[in-house]
Image 1: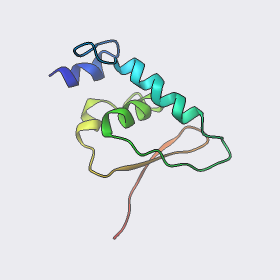
Image 2: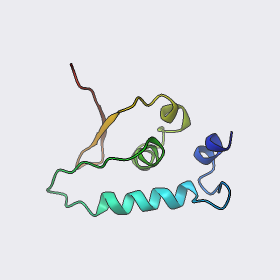
Image 3: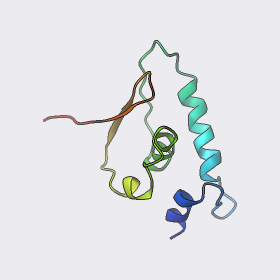
Amino acid sequence: TELKMTFSDFNYRIHNGETSLEAQQRILEVFKSIPVNEHALIVTHGNIMSLLLNHFDKQFDFDEWKALKNPDLYAIDKSSQIKHVTINS
């Protein structure tokens, strides 16, 4: 599918839209605008969240995107480590 292609080729563009590389740069600008000594919450859809997580962990790809739940929470710490956050009911 075209969506899967956007995960394997970050320069692939669907119907004159944004490439994954362009979208990843856009979400990274948001992430980098958060002061290091502050906590923040970024709320977004799965595609762009996957691109942000992929920046820190190249293993986060189409299959991980497909496995996302709604909602799904991830934390990125000061050393750029990703942790899946689970909430016990």
